[in-house]
Image 1 (tube, rainbow, N blue to C red):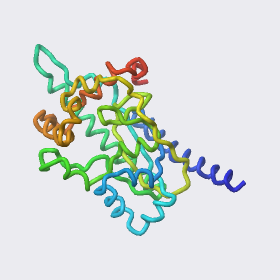
Image 2 (cartoon, helix red, strand yellow; image 1 turned 180 degrees about the vertical axis):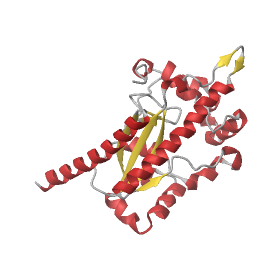
Image 3 (cartoon, helix red, strand yellow; image 1 turned 90 degrees about the vertical axis):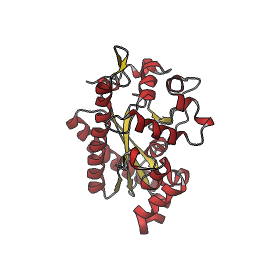
Image 4 (cartoon, rainbow, N blue to C red; image 1 turned 180 degrees about the horizontal axis):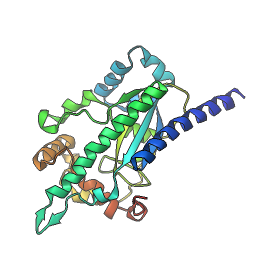
Length: 264
């Protein structure tokens, strides 16, 4: 009986948060995704620098979160026409102007996610973790400089059960692939938590074939540092590339499923 009551409370809480998020998405005319991860599971799988980040954020609440805490994972999907702008070639030249539409959308989605995560954190007494550190790649000496500044939103989303880690090291959702940005919110109210999804990429190599860094990641000291240097050299308005996202949607094994990726 007590378990039924607890489950009812969890269900009510999750619906309140979900409806708040869906109303926000409706107003901004974007699609999104929502899930809840177990705090302890996420914490135990983060690198030490990011585990310490959680300790700093939570302070005296940390032990309580280890016992019962959750992390909300929110994602907002890119509009499909923006994905089409990635790595276009016109008259034999890379169309940087079009590519920057994707870069600018990246920054815009981050702002939306920061806004909605702060609103949810305020309404439900949580702690929002910003979608990015806000530090350009050119302003750090190595990718490891980022590690203590945030946590892996992708890992949170994995343990929330809203997608799996692809071979491009991004979160892959069944609905729209990897074409989304993520944010996380620490919260300690009763909620129904999701479960981690194992990879469904199988033998697909679409993202590996389009990116020599991903293709050789197992032979590199840290492929993420190679990516950082490439983004600096690419020189878009913001630190993005997106080639592996586009090819996953257009050429990957789920391309027919992702074909429904279109605006209402």
